[in-house]
Image (cartoon, rainbow, N blue to C red):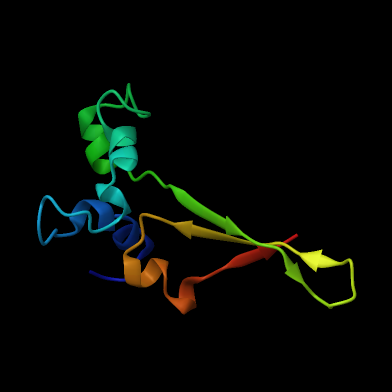
Length: 101
């Protein structure tokens, strides 16, 4: 698999599972699969469309970070993780991006 954006986002559809019954990634969970089920969130999208289209889902994490012990000022970094990326790209340090508010 290459590093082009399309190839990385196509990981969900091109990956090889080691054991069909195992939950090996977020894609194997019931909630995630229900969104792509014919009666799920993308109801109305053709079967061919569901097979070739790439849909993105995000995992969002945030937490309060105090800048100084005696300060009332704090930051709330927000981390967005694209679930459709391969795990090594999704969770690797080089791919983490954050936004501060």
